[in-house]
Amino acid sequence: MDEQGRNDRIRVLFCCMGNICRSPTAEGVFRALVEREGLAEYFEIDSAGTHAYHVGKPPDERAARAAERRGIDLSGIRARRVCIEDFESFDYILAMDRENLEELQAACPEEYRGRLRLFLSFVRNPVAREVPDPYYGGTGGFERVLSLVEEGSRALLEALRRRHGLPAGDTTRGMQARFGP
Image 1 (cartoon, rainbow, N blue to C red):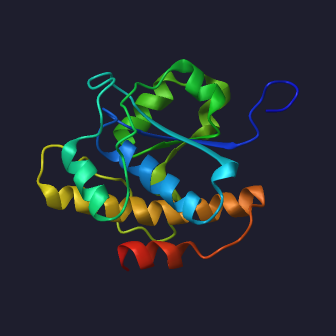
Image 2: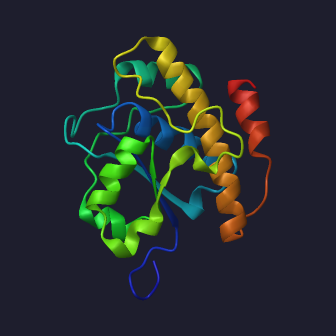
Image 3: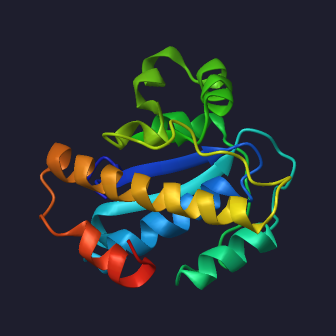
């Protein structure tokens, strides 16, 4: 923190509806990526839901198992709801889909709306524009979410490297070695 009490880290908040499937997956994947790249000191990473359905609960077991199969640990994450302070304190507030982006836009004070964005908007040629909610589906949906989140996380980190002058590296190398192409 500086002398005014501000945090100089780049603060990223991933958001979905209940904060038990998509956004904790994105938090875990992005955290693992920045740690593997040696950039953890530059970031503060969190996730939250636009609704309070699951506050205090761990990620959905299916999300946690899918992440674990790819070497990502979600066990320390607990669901919380987005609060008004998040809009001021996070630099990037990334929604998994348009519905949750609209929820965030409705709650966000005007001066912070520029911080809101769809997570996959960082991907140049995305196979999808939104990360679909896997909650009511089978394990295949959680695997698809992980693949989209891995792609989004690589693109996000590269964009933040350029924007904030962070040290360069090969984000695809570490991710592919660990998770496959």
